[in-house]
Structures are given as structure tokens and as C-alpha cells.
Image (cartoon, rainbow, N blue to C red; front, side):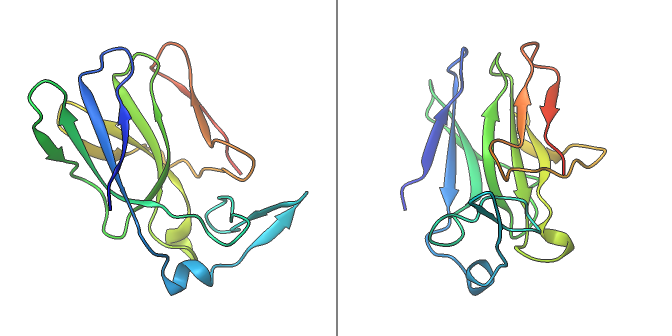
Length: 153
């Protein structure tokens, strides 16, 4: 499938290619769903469940230099990564996203990750931040591009 792309704001030197899953797994489809004020969500991932079941998620990332066209895969992602909620920092120097590796159990908890653009590697934010995306974006960048507000359960 054709990847989804996000252009780096302000600098516009890099394009992030997001590769998504084309089909949901049995684990995805059988994941539990709770209801809260009309919203359906997975109680493990704290992500919206969607009206017709779980939403597709991104499974791989790579960066492309706009000038040279060279593409570089992102390293540091765990096996079975399921990513969503991508947000560039206001100055375009960083990219934050949510990642989990399962739909149930302890691996299903969505955590905050950052993409280091210089090394094209992803790192988990420490201390681990469990995210809550039930009613919107799980985090927001502050204008200084150095800090974020995180919605926690």
C-alpha cells in the first residue's frame, strides 16, 4: 500500500512516510471495547475503538530528505509496533507519537515515543508515560518545542 506522508513543518526538509497495516489481525478484532458517553474505546490501550471496530494503525516509519530523495528507515522501534497520534513539535525539530505492541495485556499500554531526526531512531520517553487517547489527542506540544502536556489515565 501507498504510505501516508507528513511533511516537516517550518523546515520542510524531511518527509515522514507512515506505513499502515492493510488488515486487522484477529487480536485487533477481538479486543475488548468499553463505552463512555457514547465513545467506544479499548480499556488496555485507551484508544478509541471506532464505530466499526478498531482503527488501522501504522507499523513502520521512514524519513525522506526532500532535496536528495534519499529514504532512511527508522530504527529503535520494537517488533510488532502499532503507532498512532503523530505530532511534529512547533519548530519541526522533533516528532512525538504513541506506540503499543498488543491490543490486550501489559504490552497494550500506549506509551509516548520521540523520533530523533538526526539519527533516524525512535526512543521511548522515560519515565514511561501511559497515554489516554479516549477523548482526543493523548499529548500536545508546548510552544517552546521542548515540553509537552500529556493526558494520563
